[in-house]
Amino acid sequence: FILRFHMTPSARPGRDGKERGRESECLPARRALACNVANSVLTAYKLSVAPEMDILEYSKKEWRGNTPVAKSMRKGYEAVARKFASIRQVRGDNYCALRATLFQALSQATQLPRWLQSEDFTMLPENLLSKYDWIKQWQLKEKPSRKTGEISDEIKEYLLLLKKKWKCVSDIKCPVEKQEACDELLKNEEEEYRLHEALKFLMLNTAIELYNDEKNRRRVPIFSLLLFACDTSISPCQLMHNHLNQIGHSGGLEQVEMFLLAYALQYTIQVYRLYKFSTDELITFHPSNPEEDWPVVTLITEDDRHYNILVRTCQETML
Image (cartoon, rainbow, N blue to C red; front, side, top):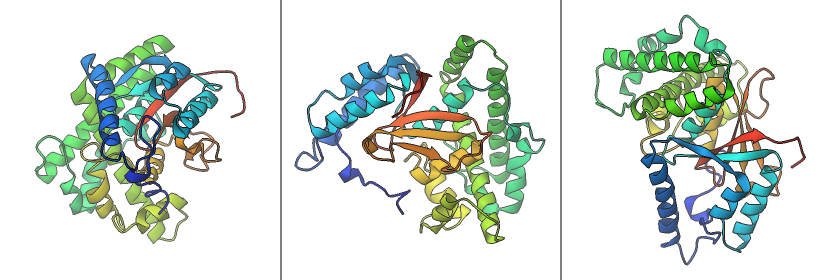
């Protein structure tokens, strides 16, 4: 399906703007080296999200070649720079999509979302485990084999932490102090891991709700039909085993899972996809027809694998 398998690794361009082909053995190594260098800088300062950088400066630094791909990427960044002034680089591991989305959501939060205010929110792990025994196979980074009760308690702690941190940040009125609080929040690697795992569990809960709605012939979004039509995720159980359990460990979010994340958070995730520059797919919304009252977070990607953050809106212009 296009949403999940729109581009294979062998078809993606190299970081220097050259297509993969005869140089297929060296370009991945160069790209990995560039990513490792960027990550080492972020790690050295214990940052998950780097400070703001001018978009055009970032573009010139990342895409210095004169190949068609490099030129197209620079043009894409120039177009985005008409709407946004700065970019914040996100640490490039398999949590980057979750990290970028959560950071953006928290940095503009002014109150707790409705789903976080629910009295049943912290009982979610216990309630789901009472209905679906297979959830006890949820993979936790630390001590992967645990008893059902321990898993429930652990995930409950993660959800409580998410609610606590969201409340703390949303209570801060000063924009500068709010950004500083978000920066500080993601400096604690252990807490950050727990927040990301909380988001993943919310995605699982949303997937179960959508799956049951479809089985009961209720109306569901198109992405849900695509999600469960894939042979590796024909049910929430398979989705957990083959996809959600891998996120952050051996893989990141696929395109269809970005839709699932948006529904779980009840946020519209707007993504500028630079490899789609000069097409009508440059800007993608997750979901495609967002609810009017959902807040919007804005990310940018060059390849639908790694996501960075766009900040500081400029005067409205047409892309």
